[in-house]
Image 1 (cartoon, helix red, strand yellow):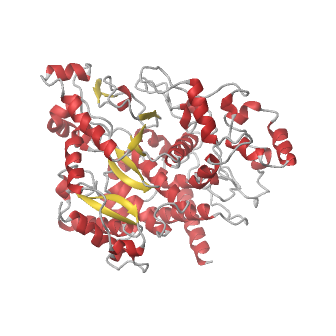
Image 2 (cartoon, rainbow, N blue to C red):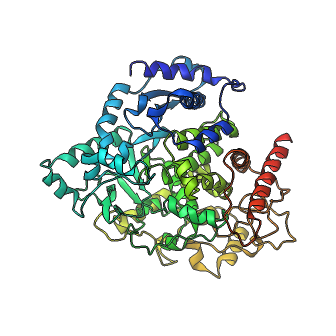
Length: 597
């Protein structure tokens, strides 16, 4: 580790060049070809394939070095984790050109690596808590969920059983017994205290306070046995000092339905009544009061609404004045986890808050290479099964172009005073104190929304903005909302002018959390199918909208020329493959023409 800091500083220096990358630097096409050919494994980085991976890793270091000073955690041959990058980036602080020449590490890398070694056994597949995004001085981290006793004692057996199957789980309990019983049976009553204790030390070292668990289960069950655990069901409540969020999100298997529906996420609703789904949505009320979302209806949301609302929640957490970091994890941490990590990175970049010097093609390369490929997403396996969560992630960018997903707007609203001199956060804290805690691990369901329109929960950002507006504005707002007082609290109905008939095609489109996507990508569609080539609108795009559209267009262009869209067959339309090809071609041409202007 002695050379890690030096290597990081050296990488940060030349990477600041604003010129075009050298010819030998791999492009997105080469990256996607390698990605769709084989799953990344750190121990396999040798030979021709290894040289490609090495170039990809170097490119990531160069892109990180444009805006940050960082240290490197060495993971040669996967000695820490077999599906993490060989050189794990630890971002330390944002840097100017001058600061890169005088880089001084703020962390003891050897101490951090030792802590990682000790803590990795606490999580499935050894996928420890790893910081991947630095925003406002706080770390946004990723990992797998907590490991069960079976993996701690039988990792070798687990690898033998599951290595060829590509299952998004870790082997664990052989019987339906508690972890504490297993510890007693193994004559090591302090096993979980020790292993999870190191995990907690790592979380605290990274100043992580918020843990977002995307599992739909309390404990994963496969083949009739328990596999893995999670912080929310740790009976010793070792993680009680952290703010735990249970935000169940469908696993990669669900995205087979997305592909079978011709890549339409609108109207696709997860079946929450399945036997294995036992994790309720549970979010502390002080994190939800400012979002104007009816969380009690989460089981009725389609895939678009659910992803939008969860992303809003995560953006609200990282945009707060709190200095604490965030951990996002699912089971193995290589499907749902990179989905939200990638969306967070791209959304914050689109607002100009992180990776400020990177162009759309560069941030796209970075998130595909680092967040997905180098952290072990099994694209080959997922494509073979039709579980196209990777494609969904970047195609979904059309649904978050609106300013309602802007972290800048969230920050402005939180500091906006009301007539009484209170800020939104002040009122949220008052509500929290009056209503008590809803984060108890012993509660069956910690739902935290108000049902009465007249209660304190009806306070929204929209109402705050109206306080300083003129009487005409307030009157117009009251008139438009008077027919549905409940909609002020939860999900406001889409006004009639947003539902445009086909002959009104040049009005500005807005992203919506409704199940309709006719105007969610910034271009009005004259038909009902999302696969039809969109017609450009006349209204000027916002900076955020323009940047995300360019990233999405670049991805679709590269994806169609390498991996290709896997059309569902048979399709009622009879020509779904042609429509998909036409859709991608239209997006590519649109991106090319707009970049030439």
